Image (cartoon, rainbow, N blue to C red):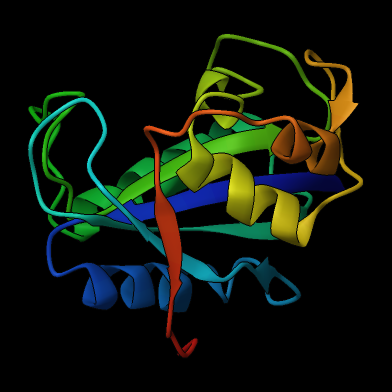
Amino acid sequence: MAQIFISLGSNVNKEHYIRQALKTLKPYFPDSVHSSVYESEAVGFAGNNFYNSVLGANTDMPLPELCTLLKQIELDNGRTREDKKFSPRTLDLDLLFYDDIICDSPAQLPRDEITKNAFVLKPLAEIAPDFFHPVAKQTLAELWENYNNPQQKLWKVEFTNP
């Protein structure tokens, strides 16, 4: 079983799409844990605020199959292949870790934005503080403790899991 972490993000009808993602992912990962939901300003473009959270789970699903599943869930929730990198999102599902695998295909692992964006690192450190980042060579709690980007503000929002 591989330990995985998936980032969930949305800034278009955000509460609806985060709920949809959780409902869709639950049958695949019934014993998953879900972080608090955080709101943050858009990074890289002017747009509506985002809701972000992280889902942690164990799976025997092979990495390529998991990546395909996440892309399909995005498409099923209004995402298009033509969406630009920095643009509004109905749903953004990014695989952050698949155990301690380091690779660039079929996904960049660990995902580069973990150490760069508070909206990824904070919820990740919340649910897996002792998970060791194989590139940064620190735990997620240590990475969050040392994180320093005052430009990125985020705040916890009231959110009831479906």
